[in-house]
Image (cartoon, rainbow, N blue to C red):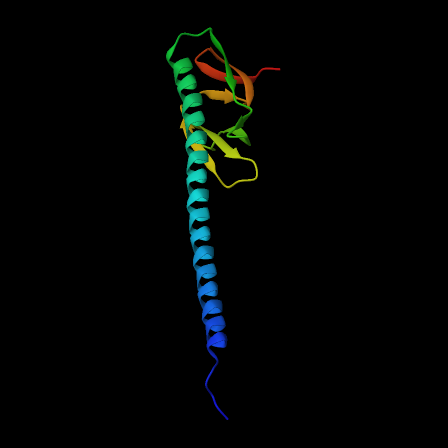
Length: 143
């Protein structure tokens, strides 16, 4: 019995090996490119959430710096980059400040911004009113 292969059989095996290797290479390439794209998208989402948080903080700091009787309506986007988000004011116990927390619904991205003392109220996407009376800044959702 001869153990030699026919040239056609060897060519078929070599073709199958090269094809398998190329398929593996392209699969790895697509996974790497997809991961990089997803990472850059997450960074952009976090940056936009941070920008909104800083904008709200600057509006609150403006209200803190002016005289009593200040009132301003502010329009907040209903979504960021097509994603729904939530926000709330938190008042940590025994601390002299509050926090603004923003996070995307159905995502882990979260932004927490410290705010000065005497900031109170409710906040939500859409139209809000920021007022200052008796040194207290109040945020209210416009209906």
